[in-house]
Image (cartoon, rainbow over all chains, first blue to last red; front, side):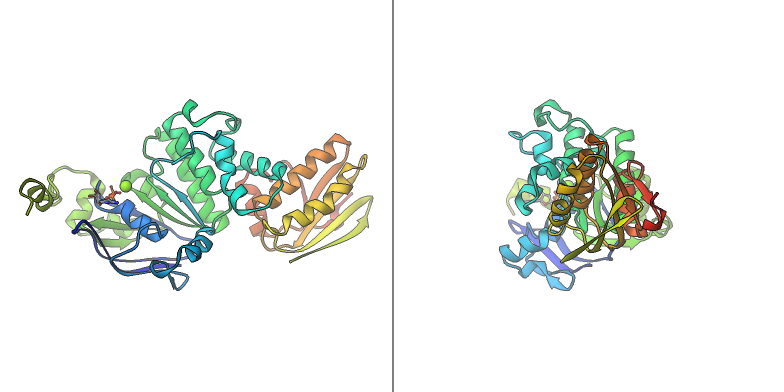
Length: 261
Length: 108
Ligand SMILES: Nc1ncnc2c1ncn2[C@@H]1O[C@H](COP(=O)(O)OP(=O)(O)O)[C@@H](O)[C@H]1O
Ligand SMILES: [Mg+2]
């Protein structure tokens, strides 16, 4: 469904993605993991067409997203559900209106029908009865769940999640994980989930990819990743502080920031 | 495009839907249901045997019809759900609020 070939992205001359290759198949849940700042969100933003790569291609059903016009991207994005790291709610709208937004923008559905859909989606994320609250009245974790309800408002074919469990308690994280699995197994939705939380990653993934220094260094099923002989992968999934991943990760970047060279 | 065939069975109005139920077609079903659901004690069955896909707007359309029917003492039933259609109801946890039959022959 999505094929990434040799994706390269630099910000201000600094290489963040240095030749990503990745394939995501229809209906699978692909988890993208890696340390903080390694480029997971940047990769996700390329997949949905918010960033344009410096090199490489991103094929969605065979068509290169990197080369599409904004109008073509809009048409493709109707099939996407996107959950940003922050949830990204509009603070001036109620919870219910936030979830309704994509339905109002992309359909001519009657208001009564939209209200019912909003209720269904809020129930899915465990927020039944919250539609009249304002974003300022709910916790960060709840905002995240409202963001997810909005992301799935239009029944997308593919959902992109950026750190769906960040800032959530373990029980709510388990609820969200369950929902991701349900959407994928029961509705055939393709999911791409960026996370650094290993428990969650192993719970939901059909396959996992590990990013390190701008490249995919390992791809495989949870069992294959668990059995990986790559010490970087082992260090990451076991969360040990000692190992080949240096604590001060980007010395090059650090030196550059001090010396300007 | 969608086709809706209306027939009568054991005191039920059976709406046999043929096609995909999505954002574009669910308003047609809603229109068909609107007039019928207002009648007192109406019994409406939706036959989904020939429906391969239903989205949330379809679910919402049936829920709205159920709300209207209940006000007038009526009933709604769903028949002939394929596995994938049934999954859509299950994920939304709506499989328990509708009376669901294997086929319209089971309507009593
Ligand atoms: N729009 C941008 N402009 C400049 N630098 C950016 C931009 N977006 C991301 N970066 C940089 O790219 C690197 C990877 O960031 P990000 O993809 O957010 O990492 P992750 O999600 O893995 O924590 C970081 O060093 C970040 O500062
Ligand atoms: Mg990130």
